[in-house]
Amino acid sequence: MLESINDFFNQLNPWLAYLLLFVSAFVENVFPPIPGDTVTVFGAYLVSTGKLNFWGVYISTTIGSVIGFFTMYLIGLFIGTRVLKSKVVQKFFSVEKSDKVRKWFANYGYWVIAANRFLSGTRSVISLFAGFFAMRWILVLLLSFLSAAVWNGLLIYGGYLLGTNWGKITYWLKQYNKIVLILSVLLIIFLVLYRIIIKRKQVPSSEGKIDG
Image 1 (tube, rainbow, N blue to C red):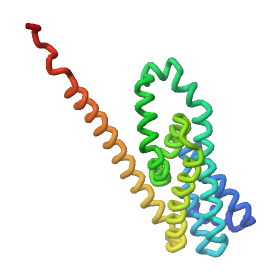
Image 2: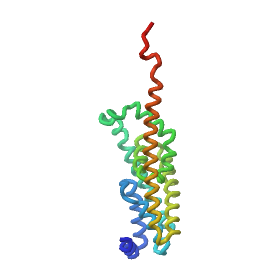
Image 3: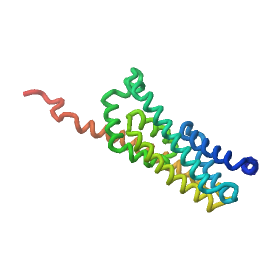
Image 4: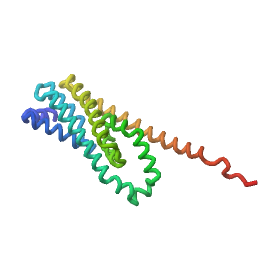
């Protein structure tokens, strides 16, 4: 399969190859199952063979990632108010809880956006929530660019160094993604347990006492 993909790219005009890399990076942010990082690393392999230019691959994938992330942010911004105020959502996500999440995003959300490229599988969710809570668009754009620039730079440079062994990076990406997923689940469990413990401690000590 690798040989057929390689032959396909070898027959392509380099500008079309850059366009495909751009589209792949864009779509990966909108439809997370699409392996955009793998395509980016393959682009790096093509750099090592001399078929493509390093900066062409780097710029096309980075711009695609940023525009994809910002597109999901705009979608979240457009439908956010309607979704959060809908009766269905408010049954499970009250206005009070919404305000708490909004405050949390106001304090820490920009840090999450800056790290979004390193949190595979959650990028679309992060961008949607950034839109839901109307985070400042200029900071969202700049931080998503910074995150994509660093992440893609590491992937492309690593793929370029490995050359024909670029598949090793995709293997380590899978392991990395598993670790991120496990840590995310553990963090959620910890936060839920923490909230339960805090609520129990906040129960009035006078509860259950007989008035004298």
